[in-house]
Length: 257
Ligand code: CAA
Image 1 (spheres, helix red, strand yellow):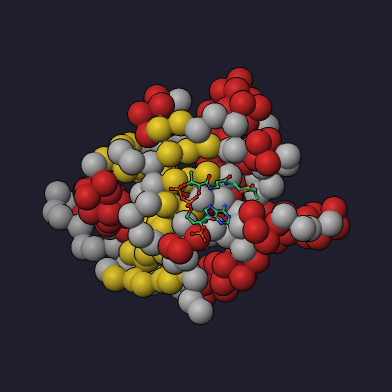
Image 2 (cartoon, protein in one colour):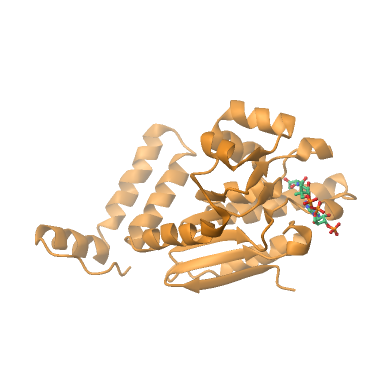
């Protein structure tokens, strides 16, 4: 059974969690398939990846509660590690990722969206970390990424209370970057992905690495990371072509690297 689908067109990939009968809930098979799909993405060809959920109702409604219900402590830690390893792989994928959140993004679903670089939501999207209502903590990085994305106070309010929020509140607190009518969401995600894919790929990738790696260290080290990546761009054809075109007052050729 294919629970994770991947298609690519015009340098933009679309990764779909496809288990709509369980609102795309993540069991270990789905997570392993996600892992394999991430490994298969050719970042020389694909310049941006959209992550979404199959069906009208859910992005991903969380980790699979039926599968988790009987786990031992050791099994639960292993399940958490599996999810964390795969979500970290998504977060550090060589190219930008956009979560197109088309419905419920709860628990592991909210954590999946937060592992993407950018989140766009449909007006029907619902976000939340309901885990304390199930007697557990978030398990796929939610406590860490939510606090970093929207600040510790708001993250603690949402996580301690298990309160779900709708798209407008997610926009207001910075959890998502834009909200669109449901029928426009994928077109808007593709438009943004196409715009990203139209820029110099080496430079875009370097920007992702600079932002992600720089956020892990202090400012002195962070600007050093940027210096190195800035310098590395000057080895690319795209830098030479684009700057020459500007100076010669002509339109530059499409980016190639
Ligand atoms: N795990 C397993 N199955 C799930 C699921 C989940 N997280 N979410 C939904 N489903 C299943 C339901 O059991 C149901 O299956 P059946 O048709 O076989 O009964 C089907 O999907 C449809 O769901 P509902 O009938 O519940 O749909 P609804 O419209 O009435 O409610 C919902 C939608 C509010 C999202 C509700 O399904 C819900 O609350 N789901 C659970 C959300 C949740 O608690 N997620 C966090 C999980 S814990 C976690 O993710 C831990 C972690 O960080 C790793």
